[in-house]
Image (spheres, rainbow, N blue to C red):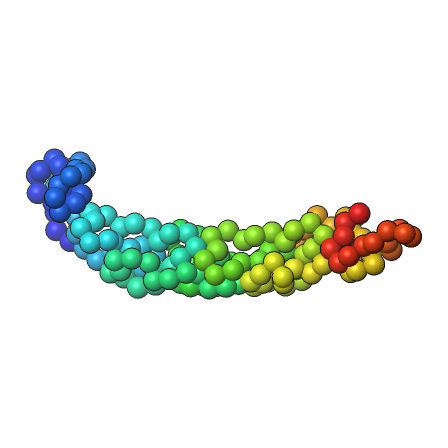
Length: 161
């Protein structure tokens, strides 16, 4: 990367419809790094969009969506998130493809493991019982402390009262 010339403004678009300021002799140019992308004509890196990843340097756009069972924060350089262990969908959540933030299992459900991909992976309170302490998320105690359904009431799977 060289240094920019002494102009105080440079074009953002080929037709110079938009301009931005640049400091005299500031660093410019170079290869876009992994975790970022650089659209044609850009003057700086753009962090990879949350839910997506930018796996290679010198990209003009994102590489693709984050894999199911994982979540990708902005700037991710892998389909499995920034760090394999920290970006697997946590217990009590599910992460379909393209997830930026894990989705909590709904009330009356939970998940027993990591890396779940769908709300259907969340375990429901057993039919014929209700789970008044099941707040969703990773609270498995709410599912194990189930109560039998009150006589003359119907308690489908996932009931909380």
